Length: 179
Image (cartoon, rainbow, N blue to C red; front, top):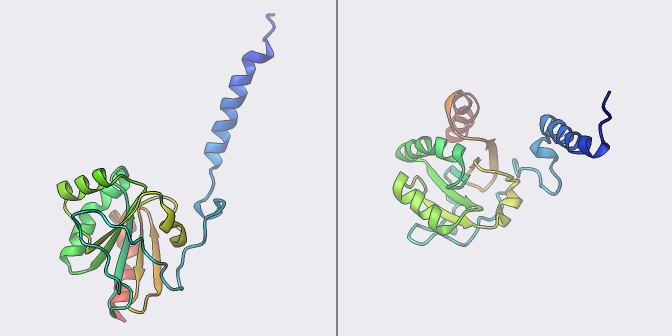
C-alpha cells in the first residue's frame, strides 16, 4: 500500500477547515466591533459628504415630524439592485427616503442613480463605511424607519423584496405611519 506524504494532506485539511467555517458562519450580530442597531434610540448622524449632482440629506432630516426611511446601499450590491424598484415605488407613494451610499465609488454610485432612477430625497456618501458603523450596518442593503422625533423605530436587514418585505417591513412601516 502506498504511503501518503503529510504535505499532500495539508491542503486538504486546510480546505476542509474553511468549508466547516463557512458552513457554520458567524451571525451578523456577533461580528467583533459591530455596535448593536440603534432601534429605540436616537438616530445616529448621517454622513455630511454627498454625491455630486444629487440633493444632500437635509440638516433637520430627523426633526420634521415625519417618518423618514434611511437606506444603506451600494451600486455593486446585487440585493440593493433587486430592491431598487421597491424604493422607487415607495418614493412615488410619497415616502421620504434618505440614501446612504456605502463603501462605493462616487462615479459608480452616480452612474447607477442616473441610469436606474433616484429614489432618494437626499443622498449621503460613506465611501469608507465609517458613519454606517454607528448604525450597526455591516453590509448593504439595510433600511431603517425613523420617526419625526429622530428615534429609530425599526431595522430591516436585506433587500426590500417579496414576502419578506410584505410580512416584516411593511407592517412596521404602516404602524409607524399610523402614529
